Image (cartoon, rainbow, N blue to C red; front, side, top):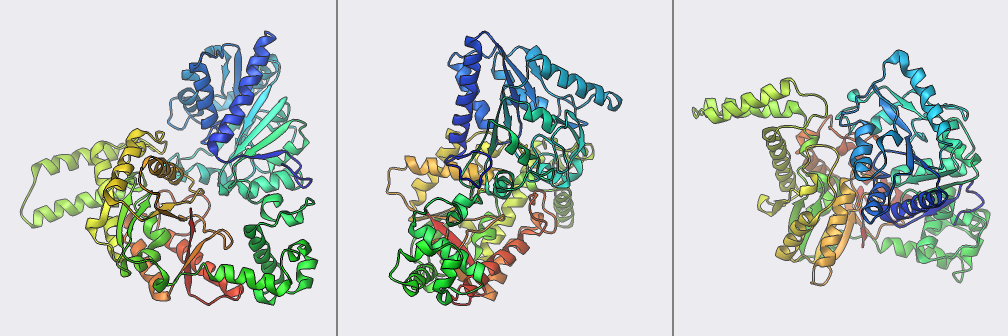
Length: 612
């Protein structure tokens, strides 16, 4: 439940599906209530990955017999300029995910037009506002939230009385959209968006947010001051708004992260007690064993002291809890069958390359399972370079190959006229796939795992040739289950990084979990690692694997084997300009420094895991 610090009601639900179900049910109830009164239901709709689950629930309800003929919809925004048939068009998105599967009459669907002539944009925006007014106003408005705090495309600086208009997109917003456009340079500079005032006029507002990368902006919008710098904060002034978030997006809220600062009594679980002590160390700049009673009292943690005989007992208890998490090479298991699932062909070495090095040295039988090809993340220039290499090699070895020359000509012709985000022809997809495969084999070898222990699963959900993926299906689950049946692992390593901006990590984790549920054998031990975006917090982690300077260097060398992702990656994510190896170096050494400051042994670098 929300607390007095939260100026907007926030409901935290377990996962995407639970949020989608709750929001969809409220929309369905509203539509049915309006129909009973022979009135139209007017919906304001959002795009992006967040509301897809809601739309799937609405489509399912229609398939069960519910009619949407009395629904009018208004979309929040559209890129400008943007043709309606473009892959990135919100017109296309809405029809693909929702309108093509419902019985809403076409003349009751309204989406800002992205290809209206520039001199007619103002007139188009005025018309859009008039259409909303004629429909009686929006009954339920569905929103997402951007990292800038934008709702719709109301970027920082937007005022509360703004209406539908053309707006210039913030740099962060364009970076966030770069993956969909295969490069930030292809993202439009502007968009047409409903204004903040238009959104606030809705009778009911439902905002959805998922993922750790939304956590900080959710806290600012909910607990911070109302400010033009965070357009979502204006929702504090609305009388009927609810935020639906998953645990990752809600993790920075005071009641979750530091509940002892809230006004309600605290239930001191072992995990929460550990988090509080670590927080206190940060506030006082003291190691655990140096904390004093007055430190606890001055920082609102006096009730925590009541859970232990005295302050020294509390300090020592937490200190021993964290020290027990450290597993040096000699403390790791040996002779186990392991499967490391890597969503992309480099996540294994990026996230746990040092641990793989240790496990290989401990004579564990390790299979690296690369779940997707990752071919979307290869630049076209790399394909051309490989063509040159192959043709030059064939020439110098005097084994000319006419069929390959023909394929090379086809590829060069296609790339010469290729448009941004255009799906590659199969020949290019094959070369990009094998570029990633060869890099993965080289990276695995660097950490001591031979090529015959690498598997390329090529899960079907990924094979669309586009950033947008298919849902996880039976074929995906069967491929994973077949590998589990073959290897029969004792330990399975899984990417637990829910901040992956592309969603592939989350989908792969879901596929693995569904396969494990069907596996009749006893469940293996599951270790969750983090990807290139964030690391487990000290209180979250169950295992810390220390790395020396040389071991971290070898891990970085393994990352360097992924040459197609070096220097400039296709999808580096919008949240970090550093290269992947730089993030790894900084993250692993930062974890070690955190333990140093807590008074624990001084290691050069550390990888962290959660045991599920």
